[in-house]
Structure formats: structure tokens, C-alpha cells
Image 1: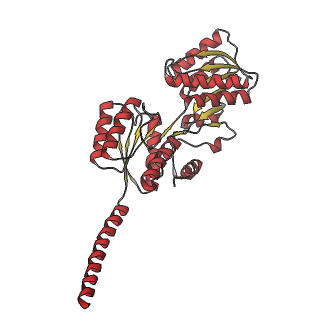
Image 2: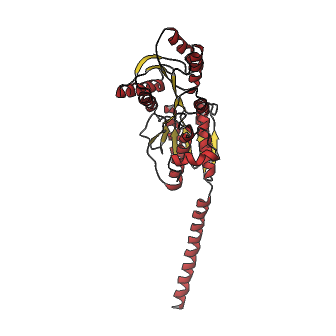
Image 3: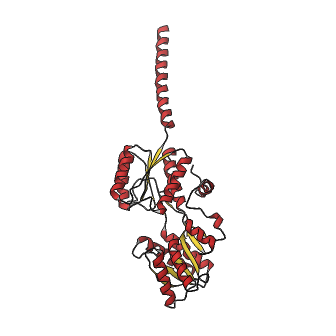
Length: 333
């Protein structure tokens, strides 16, 4: 009986030791500092860089290290970046879309390595893939928001639309959304549409041409805030600045400054800082908590005027704006 008791005690000690080792492994894994990889499109791209900064800022707040690799718009470098992150055994990867087709390749590489992956700025070519999520603008919704704002705030007006480059999917979506809102509300007449190359100079030229042709309009919708500077110059030259309402899109630092100065009347703000924060949140919740977010999360569109300028979510995340931006997306946890 005593011998049996000794054997049982011995077995108990062995099991306890093994359990202790096992618990030690679990504790070590739980104590391991997570590392998230990020494959950019290009840090020279202002939109992309602000998104990266927001992603990095949130990661720092949560005690997670980041490795951001910049392929500078080169597809082969993006593939090499994925190989690098896989070799470093990161815990999760975010990809800023370069092409929807490349997203599929990068997904397959990450999947083969067992690393969770999420996307931002555009959907992959195959949305049936089992990635975590995608956060991106819905450009038709931005066009619709602009049309809705103009219809509600300037009923009876004549609208001139200074659009982006023709033939681009984004441009077509903007236009579709704008037309949908104008038709739905029926309070504004679209009197002209002119394409540009998305730049200020062409925006100025087409606006000057419209004025010289005798086209009558009292509201301009312009596809970004850089182009708005060209529109402003054309209106000033013609003595029409201040007489024609200007509505833009973006909500970037320059755009908010233009609102504050009264140079433009409104902008359809799609804060890219929220895109970076939401992308981090999706990756963080999946890796840390096993929570899978919706497959697609559209970037919020917030109409900003001088009256609600203080409520704008800046593109740049700072200690001052972080809590407000995170609160807007419902927190990170």
C-alpha cells in the first residue's frame, strides 16, 4: 500500500512538472510582443502615408511593434516585402492595395505561411478569399454625399462639375454617385461637366473655359482639394470668387485650412486616419481576440463646413486627436 502511494505521488509530481512546463510555454507565448507587418503602396503617396502613420500610432498605443515596408509602387518589390515579412514570422500583415490582382498573390503567400492578412484602400480581385477584412472608400458614396449636400443646402442652384480623369473607375463612381443624388433630390440643375487630370492647373483651365463660354453656374463640385485651388484661381481672375459656392472632397490638412479661410464652402471628408485605425483594429481584434470583423468596412464620409470644422477628424493622428478618432470608430477593443 505504501509502495502504491509512493508511485502515485511520483506520478503526481511528474504530471505537475509537465503541466508546469506546458503552462510556462503558454505564458511565454502570451508574454511575446506581437509584431504586425505593413506593405505600403508608397510612402510618397500622401494618402497612403497618413494611413500608415495612423496604423503605427494605434499599434504603439497597444504595445505592438510594426514593420512597414515600402515597395514604392513596384509590384515585384511588394512580393519581396511579403517574403521578408514571412521570413520575420510577423503575427499579422496589412496590405495597402497596389493592384487587386496583386492582393490575391500576397494573400496566397500569407495563407501559405499561416499569417493573417487584411487589406485597405481597395478590394482584392477575388473577394471570396478568407482575408480578415478590407477598409476602403466607396467613391460613389462620396459623389452621392456631395450631391446630397448641394441639393439640400443650395436648392435651385446651377451646378458645374469639375471631375477627375475620365476612364478611371474612381472617376466613374464619383459621377454615378453625384447623378444618383441629383436625380433623387431634384433640386439642382447640372449644367456642365468637365474632365481634368486631377491637378490644379487643368481644373483652373476648364473653369476659365466654362466662364468664357458664358456658362452660368453658382455652385462648383470639384473632385479634390488640390483641384479646388485651380478653381479658386479661375474664379478670382473672373471676379466670381465668393459668388460661386465650392464643394470639394478629401478633408486633408490643406482642405480643412481652406474651409477655415472661407476659400471653399464644404468638403466631403473621408479621413484616411480612420482607414489606418480601422485597418489596425481589424488586424488587432483578429490576432489578439479571434474576432473577425465585417468583410468590408467603408470609410466614413463626413461633410465638413466652417460651422462644424471643430468636429472634423484630421488625417494626422496626434495625442490631441487620437481619442476622438478612436471613439468615432467605436474604440480599438
